[in-house]
Length: 272
Image (tube, rainbow, N blue to C red; front, top):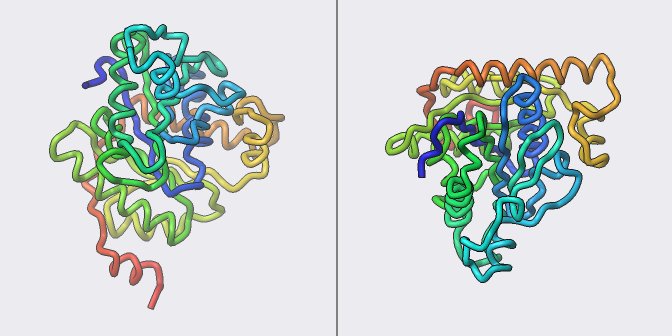
């Protein structure tokens, strides 16, 4: 199902790298520049929108199960909740452990949103996708996205995961409209390793957010960065999110990046 009328971004990256924090603050930044935003969490933990709504919301799978999977019995307010600054929030959830497929969950979520016409009133959709899993199921948000965005730190594991996601987006681009948008450097004082990878692969850095304690504390306080006590350091981060949202809204050219062979990455980043 194609999402028409909205700009759609799918955010990927190594597990624990800060995708949900990045996605939620990017969603708020889009709302701050006047856009109507929908964030869809695609993780069984269903905590993508935690800082936006201040609670763990029921997932689409939870509410479908409650009506014995008779989707026609659901109301929009059963699975869509308003978060900070008007960002609309949905947690797709995931299949039971060891069964089912994440692709089915994402497909059902988009189907419900279209049936309830929520997407008609949305300017931007942000998919926040589980870890660095790039199997067919969890790559399914790429079928709906215009741009795939990767979150990475300035370290080998993050860059290795990024490389696999670059390959996944390239594979989906053969049959769908999705294209690579670039990488957001997160939790990193420097970006030298990321830039080495970019130079070798054709990727680009869209934004760089340092490892600030305020970012860590924001999750503990169930708050977005835009709600935290201000400081000069935090102000620079918030300005960076607004600038990133404006850049993505105006449109970033698709990247013809290539994924590297595993041996190339080891050699590139200094391993013997």
